[in-house]
Length: 127
Image (cartoon, rainbow, N blue to C red; front, side, top):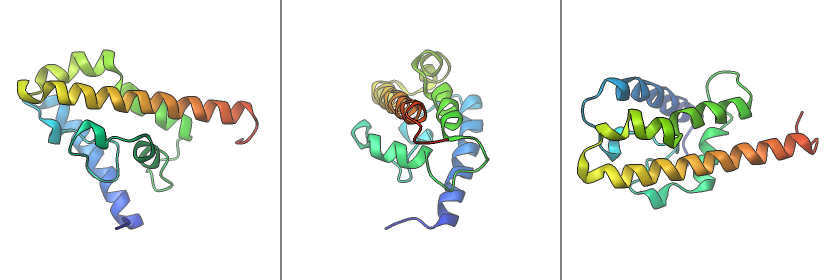
């Protein structure tokens, strides 16, 4: 089932709230993370390029940032250097590998999305 515009907006708000909570949390699990997808993934394999792209480039995304800037913001959150030092140590040992794999997958997809947006801009397709 497709989410309504209102449901998508609520999801983005919930994800922002969860990012705030992550920093203060003592213990994290796979389910603690607001994975950048419209439907919560249960494993790293669920984090497909198309699903991450649909989320970060959603027309219902709050704010008025350009798509490229929005992707860069997500990259700052999910980038392995930052993610693995700030958040991964808080993940329960049993879930740590799974979360690390998922975050790495998200970062790769975001880099690919950013690259495709840059290519499009250079080719004059957007802007």
